[in-house]
Image (cartoon, rainbow, N blue to C red; front, side, top):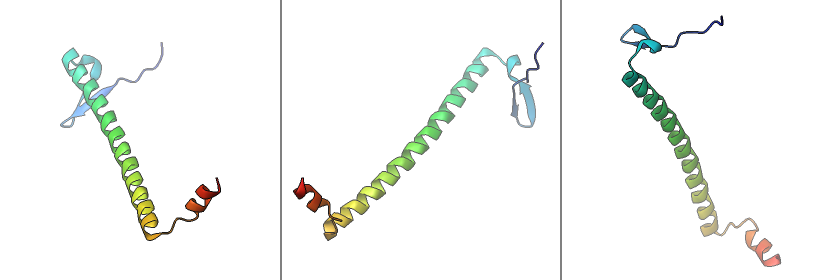
Length: 78
């Protein structure tokens, strides 16, 4: 026999074995876990987008101010 930990959920300081819960509750737990993973993914995407917007704004500001850092010279040389 293998040692398997019993998965539990604690609600209002009461711990319930997941195996003893109804199929409907198990489905809700699965949906909750999926929604939580999607929320974390959305937060990561939001951070990536925020960094992109900030970097693009900085690039726009540099271009408007005429600080091309040699980009145009490289384009003309090509």
